Length: 631
Image 1 (cartoon, rainbow, N blue to C red):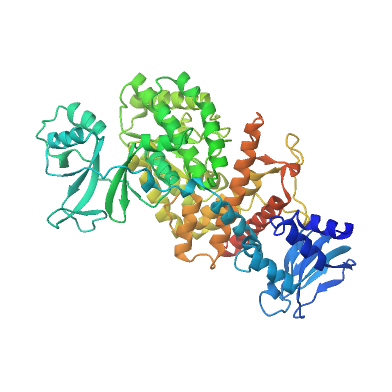
Image 2 (tube, rainbow, N blue to C red):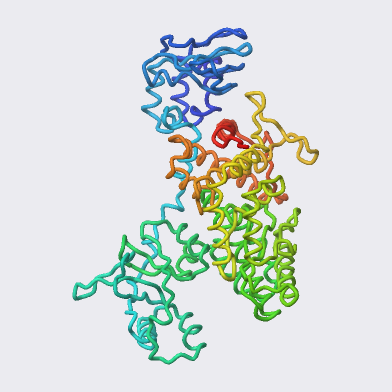
């Protein structure tokens, strides 16, 4: 093969969408390439001109504009353009001109369509309605073998069933005789039966809950109840279940999030089995679920602290198994909550029962189920309005200190901004919290906006959930009614810009410690979370997770069609890039951080990062117009 053609083939193979093509096909493309040189300022493709070639930038820089002359994109080495027209009517829709002296590879239309026909990934990359960032994220999902294992493969027995009017003794005997550890409870169908089962006589029953061997110990024996007590009196009518075609990973996350060891498995509306913690642990060695189970068996802060390295092992395992950022964030957040819950249990064992009702509240990334390896602790205490500082605050001050110090020992750094329950300002009765939240919304100030961006991502961890749920309700109902607050939050969300500098490069950090790197949290995921939060507040969403907030935003049609999907793919790619680079640090026995260095970024990742940052930049610009300032 001629040296010139070999050089063309090798250069194409370094950049998407060509990097996945076999060498023989790359050589075929190289043989048909026409090379043209353009001086700075000269047009390459003119608006509405006929075009039958696919353009690839070998060197130089190209500016692509819209029909109205507005900037569409700036491209550099390895970027492509001209394909939109090839896939429509062969007319140039986005004119292009050289910004500096530029060398272009022109690939004939017939070869372009041949590549689309032969390689699905190539077609996905260039397809008009499947941007390359979406193609990259979806391709990773297809490669994830772990998620292919369905829950139904782990179900080995049909579930035991007992009617609500049966006695607890009858239910216990049923569990004993079948050598199981749980039974599902049936009752007469209500107005909105969610799960149903048909008995031998054809009558329908509703599955209302589950009783485990642990429930019999704690709710019957420990409470001294009679064996004749009806099952209906002790069962918690709150069934958490999973569908049989869900993945094992989803089952694991469901158990983690709800701190349960038994998970009923449903096929549509009917129960087909009960998954136990041990079933998943056998399937997922070194899993985050196994770690959570270990956390609740520890009896001291010292023994909890010894589990900190296992958190790193779990996240490395998940990344290598192909889990996405949503799953990893949920798992790490569940681990963090488990540390908090166990520390709270240990504190209560030491200090005695709490003098009034309370709820320990998680804030920030853990509340959004978006925690990563690099994290600190953001938390607060919501207390019953029966709280009397003179009588009760010493207890809760000690509790907060025990938890905060314990979390620090387990690898969760103290919050530099002092957003912790150890701060008396963030250890208040519900009525005070409601006043805080109302003032921040009704009278937005710089300090209030900062607090809103932290405290409006909130989730109960331990105690009376209703105390925190009351605050969630307040935010979801009040925020949409205050456009001045939304506009102020939107302006606040523009404070951190994506690192898009001169088209081919990224703006690097210059803070001394991380010179010539990009902070993916500060420049990427954090501003993305901020702008999604603003839209979620506007549509009254009660969701905390960014992806779930996007679902709510999508349902309200607050954004133009397709925009929420663009944000979703950008968020996923930025989050996974951040997590993967943290795992690289862990595997190299270095302290993980949020920074990536250009030399550790592949050409493919560079292109996808640019797309993600551009999506973020466009979404930030829209905020100004969607939420205008009012007097």
